[in-house]
Image (cartoon, rainbow, N blue to C red):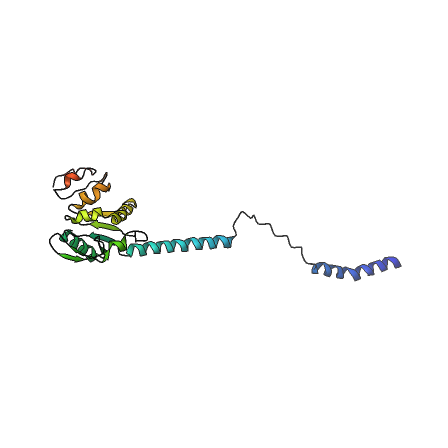
Length: 215
């Protein structure tokens, strides 16, 4: 009986402490699951998305700026150029907001004497705008007619390289009067394209498509 009483007293003395210790024992924290390296982290995806949106906005802004920028036009002139064809093109395009550069193909001088004796002073000389390192960002090259001005423009070796590069880039080209037949046709620029010219030169447009309507 004495032993039994001692056991009961011991159990009642130590049982609360054991419960308290069990209550204070921290729970085991499960180990974090290993993340699949192939799956991008959420923060990386968010950064990538923001970067893509920013890049798209920059591209749109650049395109809008390019669209708003004035178009650049080169108009070559020479001794014998038809003045009304040169000046009218220059004037109308400038009124429309284009950045027009008049270029003389007469080496060493910017002043040319047109077919009716009118003197024009070009903005630049062919030596400045042709050859290595010359600008090639023209949106349009417009060649006026008149004789022998169209021949002088067509025969200039350095300007031929400018025309050739512009043509191969698929950019806009224009010619008036004798210039389509004298300047463009021999260089192959009209092959497969419908074109017209001054009545005295229209028969020389052998590579161009025939006009389907008589005007």
